[in-house]
Image 1: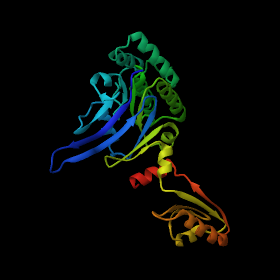
Image 2 (image 1 turned 90 degrees about the vertical axis):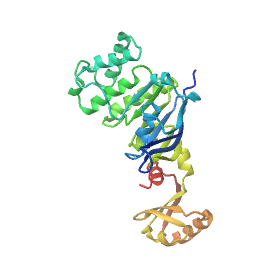
Image 3 (image 1 turned 180 degrees about the vertical axis):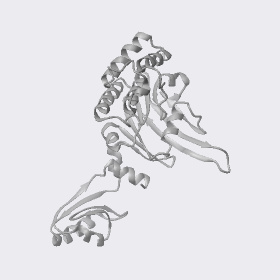
Length: 305
């Protein structure tokens, strides 16, 4: 099988010239492996869409490059990609099946093949009874379903999706995920942006967190959790606010008799543990255990939000 690895190397995009130039993305680097799914996280304006547009060749990087299969990406490579842009871009006054067939033909598919595959996908997504309806007659969520089909109709060699799950109900999300996983089984690398951290945590092999145009964290969810500052859950029978007076820890959260604490840099775990255990006996302590951070915790730490 041809190597389908997408490698983003030091991508930078600067608008304007000094003085007054605006840097939208600076030295962004990450890799999307064949048959894997990478979640692209960041607030609006963090640089996710700009990076995706550079991957797709819709924006010229100021610096850096995109590699595909270990060599500089070409227009021919990108022609095989599936892409769902931030601005969806389908034809509102055209019947949904007809325009998908047209888009398939632009990708080199025969009309009959495009019609069969589009019909199957639309039916899977609950639109089998609306094949001849105009796009503008559909709800925004259903329009999103059509856009999804447009991005995977031609059996892409890679998939780049900007907020693919926004506006979808849980059933449609599950169907879309099944379609994506089928592509992954065929070696397709998938990059998608999302604000839905639970979905990213559940689906993705790797996560890239962008903030202010730079990568603040990157790796598998497990790697990111294990590399985070250790945090511990305390449970007791009395108000846990007394933990704020102990040296060597930051109290991240107190909720009645429970608290989440983090070691300060340089603190000795054994010493802190002894201090909490010995003092906690006077506060009816029930538990003191390691707690791995959620992806939300990691995201907030990385972005300062």
